[in-house]
Image (cartoon, rainbow, N blue to C red):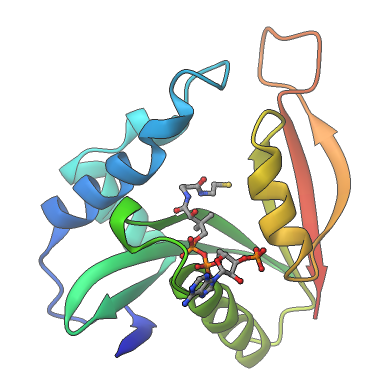
Length: 156
Ligand SMILES: CC(C)(COP(=O)(O)OP(=O)(O)OC[C@H]1O[C@@H](n2cnc3c(N)ncnc32)[C@H](O)[C@@H]1OP(=O)(O)O)[C@@H](O)C(=O)NCCC(=O)NCCS
């Protein structure tokens, strides 16, 4: 059974969470420029990020299989680092995380969920489009003269 819940108070599986994120994001390495901000995450910074944001964890039979972070931006909530372990993908866990994120944002009275995804990852854009997200803009990383990310939003 798959469950998705806000990080438990006693959560301590930081290394397993980092491994899950790095494994899930590995496929992008050869496709995106510049490299993912995931490289800034280590045991200390992920603990800090989870303290500042809301961390949703997906578990299958108790095992950590997916996650995402929700950052409060006032009217909006920013959805980041959505990841499902490579072996667990294509079985509905990503969708369960997005649904839980929507429920959480609604319960917090948010009007919009926003995310950014690298321009190269068109299959990720399609995943979010099929969940009702629409592209609202593009942005460029510092030093780049062309869009490197697209912004997508879901109105709640
Ligand atoms: C993007 C990502 C989070 C999606 O997670 P996922 O668990 O594979 O997603 P789901 O299984 O819920 O949905 C994927 C597809 O599988 C289908 N699916 C769901 N349950 C299924 C099942 N039991 N059997 C077969 N297919 C299934 C879904 O319908 C969906 O297809 P659709 O998008 O055409 O509707 C995941 O691929 C991932 O972690 N990617 C790497 C990290 C990444 O790129 N993150 C996004 C950064 S912006």
